[in-house]
Amino acid sequence: MLIKFLKKLTALTFIVIQASTLNLISPSNTSASPPKKLKAIFNVLDGGTLLLNGQPFKILNISVPGAKQKCKKGSLPWLCGAAAKKFLQQLISEKTLKCALYESNNVQCFLNGRDLAISLIRAGWAIPITKKKEYKNAELKARRNKVGLWAHKRN
Image (cartoon, rainbow, N blue to C red; front, side):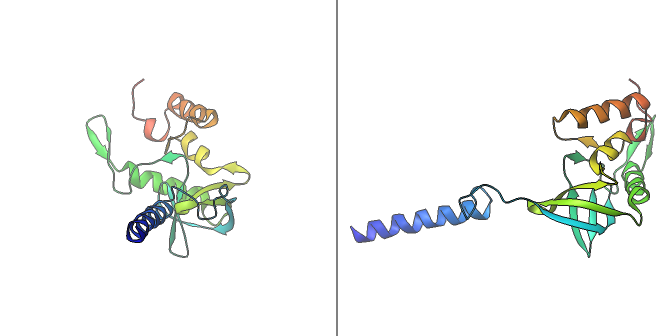
């Protein structure tokens, strides 16, 4: 009977460790801790990823074209990923961002008090992956104004 108990305990311990590793449960059994704060001048890895001291940070709530991704302008391909990266580089160059750091190196950053993700969406270089109204409104504005990724789209 003791052996059965130890086997069950071992199996349960394994499940708890796996769940904790996969961030399915928090080790402290409390609500998520508040995000850490970062205030720095970042570099750009791609149109949706920032770099600080070689560490990548993914901007929350958006999807952007990959660094080498091509889009179509009529029947001609163009490097929309490189264009998105260039836009972000120009937007944040030598400027201090204030960011909230969440799990898995995801960040929500602000430039002069404005959400960086919304700025990228409004400029047409990102699409929202959240249902938040302000993000969806920014996308609609970019589409209407035919900017960024939407510059070559027909409505």
